[in-house]
Length: 195
Ligand code: ITT
Image: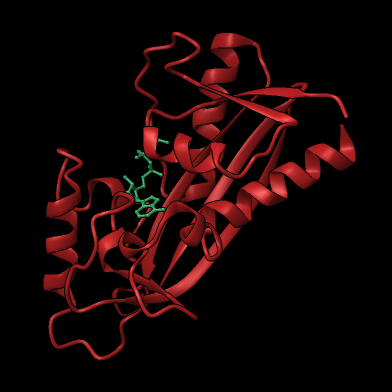
C-alpha cells in the first residue's frame, strides 16, 4: 500500500503524539513544527467544525499541501455543553490547563449530574476538497484530580467503562476509549478506501 503524507495543522504537541501513536505505517504525519511552520492558527468560530475547517484551510492556503486539523471540546451536560469550543481558553487567554480544571470543578460543586463527553472534529483537506470526521468519548467529570499523564482535562475525566481518569492511563489505554483515536480511525479508513 502507498504511504501517504499529511501535514497536521496544530501547535499542540500532545495531539501530535497521540495521533502519531494510532496512524500506523501507511500514513506519515508531519507536524507544523517538523514542517518548519511557525504560525498561530486562529480559532474564531462558535463550533468545533468551523474552527477545524479554519485551521486546515489556513495551512492548506499557506502550503498548498494535503493537510488536516482537529478541534476538540469537553462538553459537560450540566453546563449546557460548556466549556465546549472554549475548552482551551475556559479560564482565560493564558490557556492554562490547571486554571481550566479549577474553574470547571468549581462550577460543578454540588452538581450530581457529572456527565460529559469529549468531542473531536477532524477536517481533512485532500486534493483541494474538505472531509469532516467526528469522534466522541462519553464519560464523567471526577470530583477530584487524579493522575499526571496526558494533558488538558485528562486528570478529571473518567471515560465510560473505566474506573480511572485519562491521566492515570498509559497512552495505549487512553486510545482504547479516546475521542481522538475514534476520529483518527475514521480518517485512516477514509484514506485507505478512497485514495
Ligand atoms: P490546536 O488548535 O493548535 O490544534 P489547541 O490546544 O488550541 O491546539 P483545541 O482548540 O482543540 O486545541 O483545544 C482544546 C482544548 O481541550 C485543549 O487545549 C485541552 O485543554 C483540551 N483537550 C483537547 N483534547 C483533550 C484530551 O484528549 N484530553 C484532555 N483535554 C483535552
